Figure 1 (cartoon, rainbow, N blue to C red):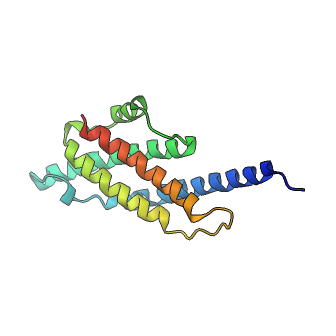
Figure 2 (cartoon, helix red, strand yellow):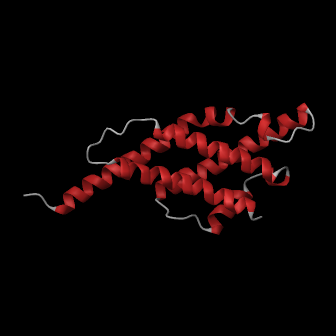
Length: 152
């Protein structure tokens, strides 16, 4: 005899494992993601200043991605202002160029979504719809940071 609880528990475990797989993909790809942030997204005054700005923005993107990973683990539906603001207190690039951080964050979002959707969904009990829900969740987290940055 099968109970709905067992199926729900199995589904929850599969969903949690998918979250861990996404986090692992993001974590292992972070260096690649950060290296893809180029001088094209930064206002270039001179080469040295541009390299310094990129270094600061990369640190901030890594901080934001860390907060997004925490949100994925916590299964937060939305990120409240306190959560986002506490992340931004760790960011140094806001005083340099908020627009550059927004552009870099949009690029990071696109690349992260691309990297997390590449693995084929191999679980029969975990539909493409459920997988897309997790991907949309990641996208929403990035959007919430971007929206907050544009409203500063």
